[in-house]
Image (cartoon, rainbow, N blue to C red; front, side, top):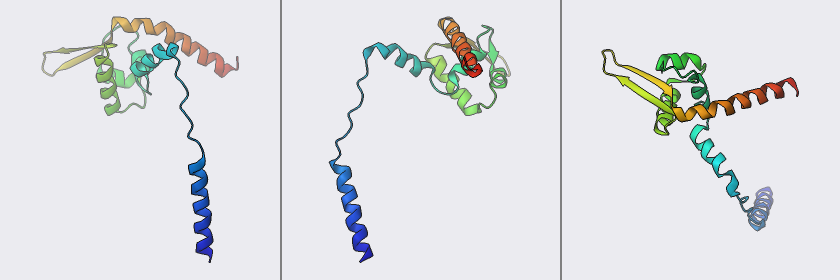
Length: 131
């Protein structure tokens, strides 16, 4: 008897779920297209931090970048560097030496991003202070 009641209750719940209209996705205004593009380029947990670590303009080797970004794994650093290089935000220079040496530097187009990152950091600092 209990099993029958449970089945009936479950079937009523399933029906109520089926009857509810599906929510349509919110329309995406076209004025946020640049923001979507920016997030696709530098989104994620590590890409902005890598760019921030290279903000001096001086080339840095893989190990130096890893030291500047606590908590990043080798896999995430190499993947993010590869993606940032493919997107043209970082330049990779490989020297034909033994042992091989590879250096990374922020590309010229990444320089325009640093003022925005500084403003973002200032905003976070003010927010933490309660302002």
